[in-house]
Length: 288
Image (tube, rainbow, N blue to C red):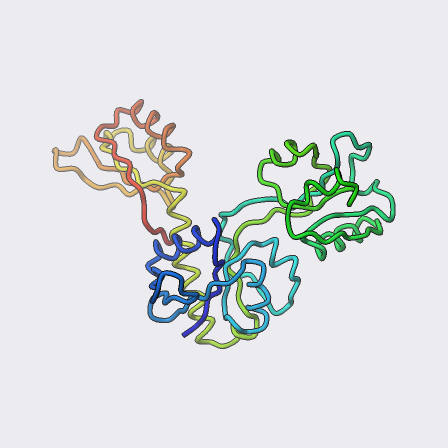
């Protein structure tokens, strides 16, 4: 069975397992605290720390893995290739300094600046690209306190909304990268046709769920003589599907997939065209 490394705890783990479940690959555990589970007939999930997953995949201990893009970039292993951007777990890796500091741009930091971070590789490569020679202060957590204790001058840390930085008297002065959860694979394993096929199948299944989450299926009875206007309101994936209604030709049923954020406006536009019987429903899976 092909192995997929999944984070053993946290929101990333929960979101990944939920996604696999919706894609038809529910994790089946032998016991409550088991570190392995079956995912359908072809895959075995192994549960390890999110930060260790790039190494597990690079070393071939798992053919695939689900982890943060920031951790993949930090590991910087050529053996690991991205298979699919999963879109959830969004955050940014930023440079932050004390709110009362004078520097507003990381490029203006002097050589010898002490940087507290749990991403030493990314921090070094980022500051090297700016021509700034830094001293990395490795931390495993709570980097926000380091500038206030005199341990470091700035930090490189993950931020979602920036509220944690502000609460701890820090402000963002630069962004290194934006990260989301990624499905990654072992480069050598993906050169094997059977493994490549399995990777395509599972990534297509996951992508179909992700695609569906952002869209809704809309159905409405619309006047036949307003079809040209309806097509402008319901572009769908490749145009709306039009079905005859058994009412002697005055009405037709229009079916289309619409973006979740456009549903409210679309319903109002259809009502203005005289549409009736509008129904909106969720989609479980959507393949292009």
